[in-house]
Image (cartoon, rainbow, N blue to C red):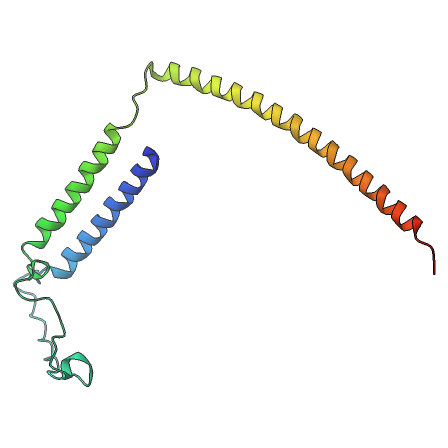
Length: 159
């Protein structure tokens, strides 16, 4: 994979990590009272303790995440997510540092572009000549085929 593709992939990774980080922080953030004058929301009704069928009815845990799990620890989650984001950013910086350095500045780059364009034009002209020669040969083959088919049809005696 070339360096530009790696950079694009790393940017996508950073965007995905940022998206997941913001979503996780939004999901796990504790409620905050906006104003002391704002009334408390009504308490949510209690969830049913037994489910019909499924894992809860069999005595198995519905949520495999325990209280000790790091993904359930709200204070640790932002640290883990930010560390992952910083790691991805450092990988991006390493890829940028691996890009080849352009020597000579803008004028040298423009000169190189002109040289490559001239080379491209020459190759394009050569390909065009080859295409014209191939078309000419194709027409000759088609004419010979038609002539051979006509000769075969003329050799047959009518019934």
